[in-house]
Structure formats: C-alpha cells, structure tokens
Length: 310
Image (cartoon, rainbow, N blue to C red; front, side, top):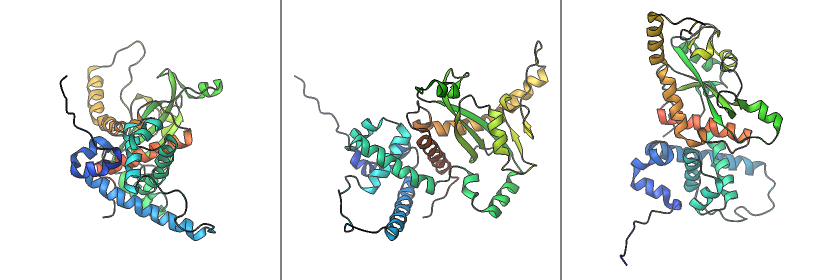
C-alpha cells in the first residue's frame, strides 16, 4: 500500500495566525485586505469593551465579575468566525464544526459581532452622516456635482409557508420569492451613497428609488436603467417604441450610456463577493437586513471609502 503524506491544514481556531503568516490570503478568505482586517479587529474589540463597560455600569451585579462559563473562542477568532460566515455563508452547523463550537454558539457569535460591524462600518454615506444635519447638507451639496447611479438587485429567499407571504414576496422576474435591494453609488463606483434593503421582490425599482430621492437636494441628478423611466431628474436609456425599432443614433447613445453605468454593476459584484448577499436567504428578515447592511459596510471598507482609526 502506497503511503501518502498530505498537508494538514491549520485549525480554524488558528485562522488568525494563518492569515498573519499568509496576509495575501485575507482577501480571499474574508473579503478584505489584511491591513484592513487588523485595524477592524482592534476597532471592533474597542467598541465591545466600551459596550460591556456601559452595561456593567447599569447592571446590578449578583455574581462576581468573570463568573459563568468561560468563552471557548478568543475575541479575534469570534470576529473571524463572523467575517467567514458573511464571506462564505455556510450553515451554522457547518460553521460550528469548522470552528469547533456548537451551531447555536456559532449563530450567537455571528449576530453578536454583526451588531458591532454595523456600529463600526456605516452602510452608506447617508447613514454615516445621518445624525449630523450640517455635515449631511455639506455632503449633498458636494454630490450635486456628480450624476449618481442607481440600480437594484434581488436575492432569492426561502419560500414562506404562508400563502399570503408567498404572494407578497413572489417576483415575476425571478419566478421565485425574493428580497430586493436598491443601491445608489458614486459615478466611479468608489462608494455607496445610499442603500435600502429587504424589500419584497415585486416592489417596483422606481418606487423604491423615489423614496431614496427625498434625501437629496432638488438639483441632484441620477442615471438608471429602463426600470427608472419616469423618475424625476433621472437619465435613462432610450426605450424601444412598440412596433418600431430604435434609430442608429439611439442605439449608439444606449451603448455609451451602458458603458457609463457599468460601474454600478461592479459595485453590485463587490456586494455579492460576500455570499451571504448572494445565496438563498436562510435568515429572518430583521437579521437579514442587518447582515446585508454590515456587508455594505465591509464593501465600503474594501473600496477604501471608510478609514478606520489607527
């Protein structure tokens, strides 16, 4: 019998050590660069420490500090577990087996750190400055100089057992029950300006977009595909008239316009690098919304639109 020596891969509990020794693997394993990961881990743990301190200040303590079952995973490994879930979207049972914890603990750890990702990484420019009216007015004044690009994407969700919910989320375009996201991006695709998530699949793109438009100045212009025809201050391609064909100049104009809008498709591709934003949704709606918004924040970090404190 021929003896075979196979390389033994490192345990997922040692994933951070593996990435430290092979930093170039960080982007493929977790979706962000090693330098971004290092800063993010420090910042997330700082937010957690502050949150725990605030909770302890309000708590009427019965047991001594540090009592209870000790944690199995380190803080760094828990953050890696969360990022690994968003990047590859395994079931919680598989995730638990991968990191040598139970499925319920993998679920709890993931959603525990998603809340800190939401604090650390705003999902859009709008969310980043929404709490400061003066700053947002300055940002919207700057955005007027560009023509923002809008598009939407659908993600298939597990079919609801309730027939009314099936009708509510059934998308005739996808022939399945879906969630819809509407994204507005910069014309070079370098940042997400505004995003809304977890809308029922049949929601009209232009209806969702009109709700988003209210946050911008009246002189802000946009570019969208044929689904956005009729929206105010929005440039769209020429639509083929019924029973007639487009002229050659119109066809050429559409081709040029499609080349200008392709950047929003690249931005959507960055979102779907994180498979939790691409595969069939297995989460409840409220958890799903937080996960997708956390992914938008990670994409902004990946693109360099968010600078974490050093």
